[in-house]
Length: 239
Image (cartoon, rainbow, N blue to C red; front, side, top):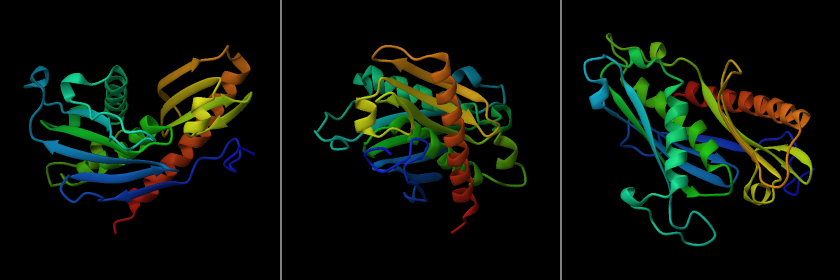
């Protein structure tokens, strides 16, 4: 049993609140325990220059942590002075969400996913990807017409979760305290078929074995399957 009462293979409580902000084409508040991220999806009828004339759409992401999303106030980042961490995370979100779509069926549309962390307690990038996917689906649904079908564009549900080794034990969905003390920390992005989209991992203190890696993969697969079930439940709720 972990300090917070969870079992090693137990996710934090996950909530997805749809239409959290009224203006975007797609919007959710995603909560992984005490980590809370607003994910907004904006549709524009234009594409980057390198896609002009190719009848192919694009998805990109921006990520940020609000000044008091953590214990101490951090400086608000200007886009031209973003930290390396911020740029790395928003590129990860963009790559992950693009992989979930048939971009050649999106038409001349670009979708920007804005992920704003309003409260951080570990796993902000995994929460952003999991919540950002739901916001993306809602934005695509807003475009449905006789000429466009969001169902044709969505290739596969996509979710993300962290796994780590804490006090020599493999655990799922690390909060900040666990993440700060982890001997190994990994982030997994997978689709609903159980295939990997991206894996990030490091042993900050020592190393991990093949057996431990296999255990982390199995735990991530189990966790992401549950996350995708929660995504589907949220998207089937039309309230």
